[in-house]
Length: 413
Image 1 (tube, rainbow, N blue to C red):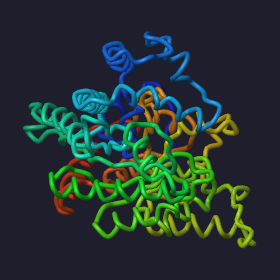
Image 2: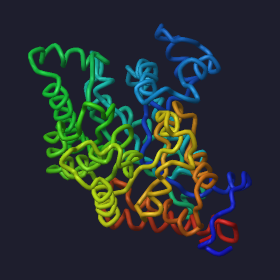
Image 3: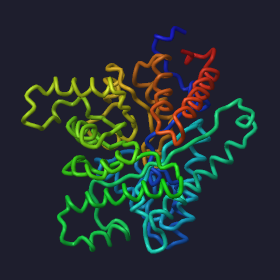
Image 4: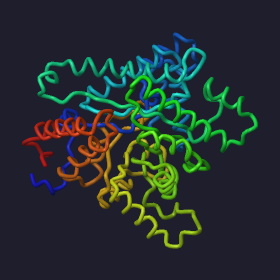
């Protein structure tokens, strides 16, 4: 097959895609809890759920479609409720890694908001360490497999991303106390302080325990909560050599992405869905909106600011997007942007990396060369928790395994 001819979509490709080495650079721990585990812990801890069956939760909570991003985010209240003890955090992280390994994901960056889990029995260090314990256990088990030990296949690796919230309420014991302590601070100051505290904690835990905390993130509803409000936290992370990724352009326009890059030093952008939408350029100082968007896209392309693409979750949280064929991923490909296909939330969006790639093949004209580049970008633009030389070696092993896996198939580039 000509490497520049679009891949013809077929369900027969699913098994091949599941076997090829992949990454997931944008996946939330609390959005990827196995439902049987959620139910089991909820029953054990007497936590109220709308249903105690997988079918019931899928109907009432983890839906196929959501009205908007805000409704989508409400699902996390249920998952976070079962993540309030060390052993539960470790178990959920362990199972999440297993789920990724089972479909060929060889590198993943798990993101979550530690402040949602800090309580009387867990401080920030304890929270992050137990998530790492679960991931490390799954990593060790996988990398002890004969095919990995022999060097025939690349090992599994991971990093941890700590997420600050653009805004918050008394969502956890920690946030409730934080709000009480700062009772006389306005919300903008309060949210910024929360982010700064997390940045300082993440750097401290990384350095003291040697945990693979590879990046700092900003998550939550964009509207009314501009990225620039969190400048101090990201500046601290930046000055302490921690990578940055920011949810931007998920439910707001190009200026949100611009702020993430210019104010928060973002190395990658989470979602970036509205990057090309000139109607969402609401700054009156910008006269030529089309040029502004094109300049922004060119900057992102030239500086290889990778966009973490999440097709299913964008379809679920944007009512105006009725067909994936209209997703801005098409424009991202056209503009030669560095993109990586991710899941966002495996449980909330009922998806996997394999499924997201299949959706991309079904809805966009991707050539074997383009698909390979997207897969490789995931490895190359990862925040790998080791030296640059070891990262290069690992990426090379994954590329070699990819080429070996697709050799002689319709995906060979």
